[in-house]
Length: 352
Image 1 (cartoon, rainbow, N blue to C red):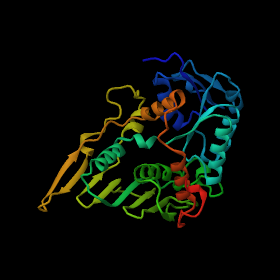
Image 2: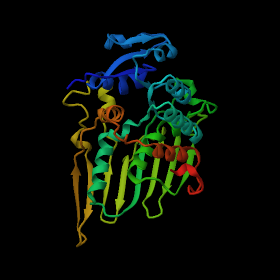
Image 3: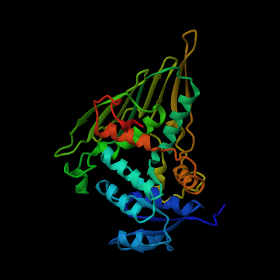
Image 4: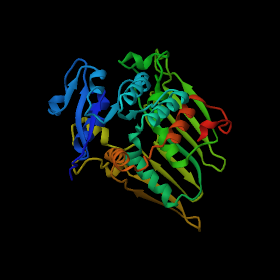
């Protein structure tokens, strides 16, 4: 299928995120056209996308009247300012995580988008990971019964400080692991369980010389349960299962198994038949307790992971007015969890 009116799209950067998580999908989805990218120094994009225009600066790309959608995929501390600039230029915006570093910033961006009759859409691609899709299916099946305890983890072992120094400076908005991996696991949890009553947060600094959080744990409390914990760390030599769910009738354990990032790093096309298929040996383990007390454990194969689902949702929203699955209220909850822990959330108008 091809589109007679493709969404002319510009990327504000062509670093790792642009190369792996955005450009391949914009180029492959028939409803999009990869029109332009900002590359201040090294001009790499046209080696793979010869028809793409390489602009030297953001202002030049935003002045391109043909561009309808701008993907803000720059460093965390620039997200709000560049999203604001793109909206003011009359563009729709697909905004990388974190979408902001405060609730006030995000509310300002949404107000501007409404005033300009443009859409502000969040790029939360991990909803389309194969492992999380497997979790979602198991929860929806009801086999676990009433959920009691849920843990989502995103663990790595990376002792050296990041070579991009802004990621390691506490004065830089959005620095540290809480704003790097926290939005991923929070978005997954909030998309499943909704708004918590309150959040408790623990942060840690464990790498030699670290000045920013390289460990986080957030406990999301729901009046009727479950107790949901999301966590991540950079000093985890042997990761635990990334998804652990316990309910009155069963448990589900799943490692982080999505292969999309590795495949994209190897230049596999999202249209390849093998794309997004995780190894069978990484299947989740479902244990169900029968009425007679007998336990049965089985492997649960994950569905195909596919970030193309996010771009399909963007297309449906921009061209057909379909509700975008990553909602404004979910993003506000996410930012409250990141920046306003330990508070009861029934006190003001931000709850939506």
